[in-house]
Length: 189
Image (cartoon, rainbow, N blue to C red):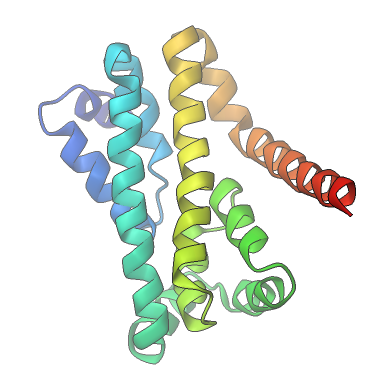
């Protein structure tokens, strides 16, 4: 963990964050949040710029993962899924896409579901690319900018709260979004 703290304040930290965010969307097992948090704590005045770098890398990686799933599923996609032993989740995600489409993308983007599974399967199961990227932008953007905003406002005081409860926060956010959408849909009908 000390190396992450040292890296977070180094000159090339943003490039490393971009690369981690990009590769996490395809195959890398470590979420970019682990680098995002110490980088923002090291340079709180750049919190939103750092979140933007993280989001840009993550979205470009999401597009690459989508195209791997769409055009190279047998050659590249399945080996990644097999490497992480995500075969059961692969079938579950297919059912979620069939039933919930964009909400399944949002769930993967906000929760501990491996995002690489979402990006690759979105292409493999032919989710509309524009919808996939828009939902990824909104959900991943919310995730990274919410973390950045909390750290910008509260600094070190909120660090342990984020590190211990990020998954719960994102799950509650997803539930709120689904309930809000259901209420909105009910009011329109």
